[in-house]
Length: 143
Image (cartoon, rainbow, N blue to C red):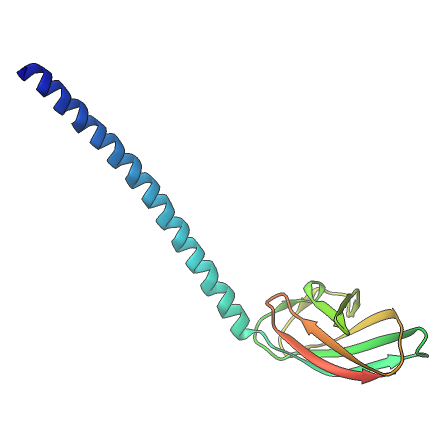
């Protein structure tokens, strides 16, 4: 009876060591993932705080049946933006655009012009420009 009890205790002891080691590995990996996510969240929040744009002017060129829109925007924040990563919405619909100058790097205090071709509709319209960091600005124009 004594030998069998010793074997059972040894098996339980080894099982506890294996489970403890496995649990530590899983908890450690999970903790590292949480730390990495917290660092990413801080970086994203920091970029959002430093990003700002201002629409200077939006001008429609042409008749209401088919007109082109020129939007002049200044990067008023302290974050360098990617001008190809903007979303431009006209009355809630995403439209494609052509930046001028064509470079994608948009440094602070620089102004860019964005051209949207082939729009239609008379009357007042609303334009919204959203940066890659989620910061936006609105403007209205009439055709």
